[in-house]
Image (tube, rainbow, N blue to C red; front, side, top):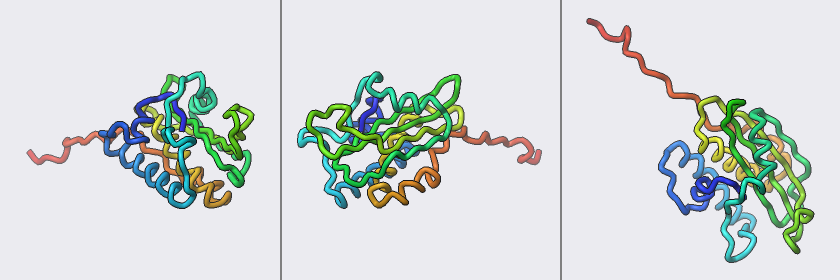
Length: 187
């Protein structure tokens, strides 16, 4: 996983404890999926000394950044995960005057010789919007969890992955209701 937000990478790799229950419940979905991938597919980081996820500079995350800035739902599957041995995930979130949303890109490689861009094929990408008022952390965490679950589903078969975007329920970022006691008290 590659992301230009160190906080989300630290949460995803247990380097830092998430203190927010709603975010932590989303992270547990990602952690469960990663555990399933390890058990069912012998998934490992790209090298024995490598982490599952790492921070990258914004310039190296341009594709996910562009998707996040769309602030609307658009999903594209380019190919199946069949035959790929390595996967690379990029994700990003966006909060701007133009809207709130996130995006992710999933790449696969059959072999890695030099880890050059031509070694990687785009499998799928997705952009989505969230309700206004979402915290930046929510817009960055949501695509992280979504693409991990998508990869888990895709490895179960392409039909599952095709339905994943329609079934996914993004984190609810609407503001909490304001409790009004007016009219509830007898005076």
